[in-house]
Image (tube, rainbow, N blue to C red; front, top):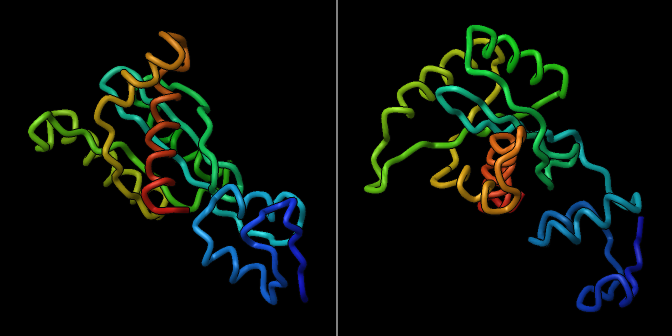
Length: 173
C-alpha cells in the first residue's frame, strides 16, 4: 500500500510513505500517529494501560484509550478489602495490557512509607492478573490534579491520569 500525505495534514511529512505503520513507529508525535489511526490509515493492536494513584484511603484509577495514547480519569476506589478484586476485574473488563502505578517517594528521592504498601499491591496484582506493572514517579500528582480541577470526587482518578500521561510522555507511547 502507498499512502499520500497532503501538506494540509502535516506540512513536514509531504511524501509517499510505503508503510504507514513503520512511519508511525519512527515518528515520535503521538498526535500524528493518532490522526493516522483516526482516519483509518493505520490500526493499532489494543494497548490499553491502567494507571493507579495509590493512597491509604482512596485509590485513583485511570485508563488510556485503545491505542494507548491518551489518559482519562476513570474512578476512585476505597482502599479496602475489595481493592484487589476490583482492580483485577477492571483490568480484565478493560483488556488492560500493562499497569502503571505511581512511585511514591519523599523529597529526597527515597521510597516513602506509602511505597511499602504500593510494593505489596504490585506483588498481589502481579499474581492476580499476570500483567506487567511499571512504576512512574508521582510526586505531587494529587496536588497537580487539585490545581487543575479543585477538590472533587474524581481528584484521585485525575491524579492517576496525570501519572499515566507522564508515563506516556516519558516512554513516547
